[in-house]
Image 1 (cartoon, rainbow, N blue to C red):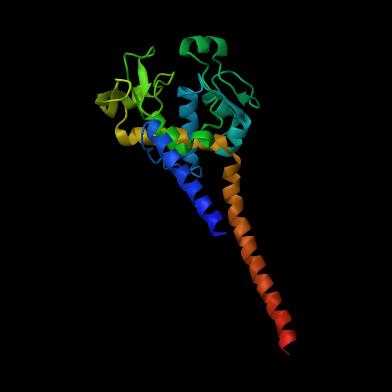
Image 2 (tube, rainbow, N blue to C red):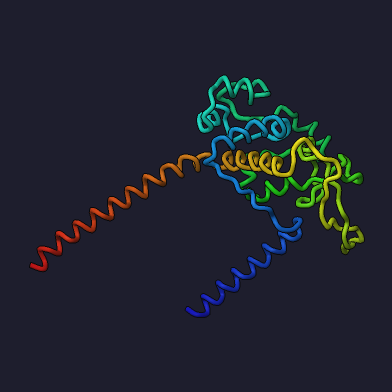
Amino acid sequence: MTKRLISRFATFACGLLLSFGALAAAGGPLEQAGTDIGDRASLQRGAQLYMNYCAGCHSLKFMRYSRMAEDLGLTEDEVMNNLNLTGAAFGEHIISSMPAQQSAQWFGQAPPDLSLITRVRGSDWVFTYLKSFYLDETRPLGWNNTLFANASMPNPLWEMQGLQRPVHGEVDETGEPTVAHLELGTPGSQDAQQFDQTVRDITTFLEYVGEPAALKRQKLGVWVLLFLTVLTLLAWLLKQEYWRDVEH
């Protein structure tokens, strides 16, 4: 038994070390997203931002416009007039209008569907990634990312964030200088706090898209806990009644 526990602990410890190693290789520690999918206003802002800045390239093939409207408290007219930019029907899935074959030629690969990106990468990763773009003249599109190096996409939020430039540090094993940190060369239309909220709203929306049932699960959870509390009380009263007969 003891050997089994030691073996499991060793496996767990190795897993942590590998995770930390992978995190360092991916560009360092992640920032805390601070998302709250119970914040309907944040979800609505995130949906609008996503449709305006991300949906041109990235689909959400597991989400329907009608389901999004129902969950986010939006009317059909609000969705069709403000969030549906492709002319799709209200009951159809959110599919990008960008042709896959041409986009693969432009960017080197077709932009991925983002329906499950927060479930695969995590909300903190998405939040940090959207904040980590910087200008890089060596890249075909002129952009790079400290978290996901050589990403095949430009910064979709650069007008709000501004233009970040790298401050180089030590040289790595390939002879290339590393990026020590980023500094804002040209300010954007938002300050740092406003931009954090913008990215948080987009991340919150993507977190919801990854698991829409989470909204209802949280509401149902309160009722489940209340039910279990009442059931426990009834069970205790029943137990008291049975033991009263036994004791007498």
